[in-house]
Image (cartoon, rainbow, N blue to C red):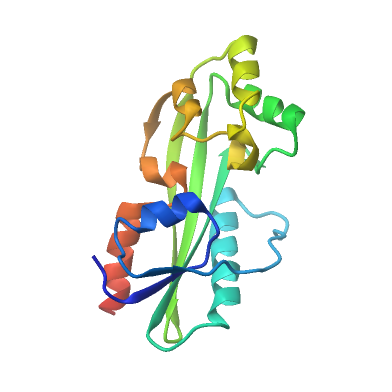
Length: 190
């Protein structure tokens, strides 16, 4: 566990729960920034870009000896990045698109303090079962898909739709805790 004061620049309740596994002194301070992506970024580049701009927005309120951690997660299939569904039709489209296929979840994380920063990203492959229309309709009729990238929450009912994953489970939830723990140690010792 780290004793330093950590600022988590995120409003995500899932990230708050996850970071508690490695930091006992965490303050939640969401950053406010324009999350419009420049054209032509890959999913990995997008999450790294977004974690950096969230971190930069949070740095303006930084006190001495505080460490800011910011993150962003996207779901990508092929060249398409899936954000949060706009409505039930959009959720249906996303779950149909993921059905029977493998997609990637990327989380970008930026750590900064004292004028230095480091950014990294983690990728997890997620394999969905082939779903029936009934399974899709049952899932999108819950509240779960509507505030989640890609329209699903692996830690919830969507876990029943997933055959397997290759990579960090917590990355799919929204924060690659194990990698963050190692990166934070290296950052503090640099």
